[in-house]
Amino acid sequence: MLGFRVGAIRKVAPRSLLGLGILAMSAGCATPRVESPVATAAPRPRAADETDRRGIPPVVQASHSTPARPAGRDLTAATLTADDLVALVLERNPTLEQMAASAAAAAARYPQVVSLDDPVVAFQTSPLSVGSPNADYAARVELSQKVPLYGKRDLRGQAALAEARAVAQDIDDARLQLVEAANAALADYALAEQSLGVAAESTKLLRDFRQNAETRYKNGLAPQQDMLQLDVEAVRLEERAVSLRRARQVARARINTLAHLPADGPLPPPAELRAAAPLPDAAELRGRAVASRPDILALADRLAAEQAALGLAHREYKPDVELLTAYDGYWQGVGGRPLQWQVGARVNLPIRTGRRDAAVAEAQAKVAARRAELARLTDRVGFQVEEAYEQARESEQVVTLYEAKGVPAAEANVKEGQAAYVSGKVPLLSLVEAQRNLIAVRDRLNEARAEAFRRRATLDRVVGVPTASRPGR
Image (cartoon, rainbow, N blue to C red; front, side, top):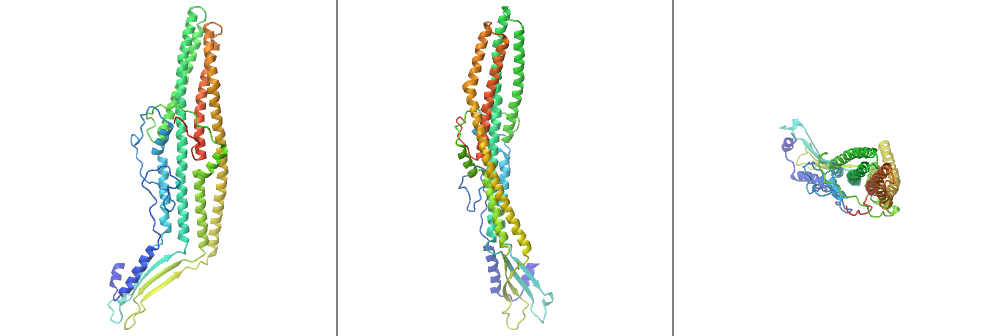
């Protein structure tokens, strides 16, 4: 309908149409040229300088696939190490892909908020002028473009970019949590496996004890009750083995779930959990956490977004401009129509100050709330680092204590008890008690190693960066 009417206009000056076209092109060129902030690469750790020219980190928005085996990862290795497991989880866990899609959506807000509104074309005509012998065809064509006050689009863009950076920081925070979860699951897996090994060794040692008891019984040096007592101890060990096999399977299921694999899928045995490098100074770790924790950086970006919104609220007191040009065929002057070509502008009058005052007050309150939230989070991070540091140090001291004193003493106690029982110096209960103590001490050492591994993983998360390299990973 519009194309037919415009084409029906007679005697429209070519220079006038050229002017309309120039205004339309100028309105389009006024919008800052932007590039898509969404990259096609898969989610991966970002370097500090890995941003585009507007400060948006690359993110991905892609459909998730579930192949039987992850590309580039081998689950048939001899042992499952922490580094291999973390790489597998970060490669396949759908949480990161979900958050990457959210980051892509946030980044896509920038070209929307900095863009000008679409230009508007208006057309009107007098139908009775069509074919009239008394007047030329009368019509009016108008092209207008709304232009916000200088700086408004820039502030909108700043807010969108800050929010996009915050969402990207949320991905890094999720990555840290996945790394901690993967290490904790591996610690549980290794603990169950090592405890099963302790149970197997203890069962073998009980067989030796029973042979000793049987020999003494045949020689009339011990009652049959000694053999029965050892049979009861063997049943207790078997019961514990049943519980440990359940714990091992649950740990495997947790690892497979984190890696987006079937929960009952096979896994290689876990690598040995070795001691981490010495802990850095606690004050240094607190400084690292405040400077590098993704949740702190994300909150700082959201504060920047609120500050940009406050600046925009202040600018709403200023008017916007709407530029327009028109060709008016209603002028019916004789001998030419020099007044038909028109240009002009419309300006809104921001006299409704009540709602603008409220908008500024709202923006100021949001900025104050974000600042308080950032201060509260900074304080909490300091406490979390101190707590995790002391827990990690405690666990490592316990490991050292049992390795240096507990296990050697328990092993020596069993060895001496067995020799004393064979020679008839001590009753069977003394030997059984020594064996129970050895099992408990070995289990406690394995638990302390797993706990130290988990607590170091927690410390890495609350600091935001690895606190030290781990030999043998």
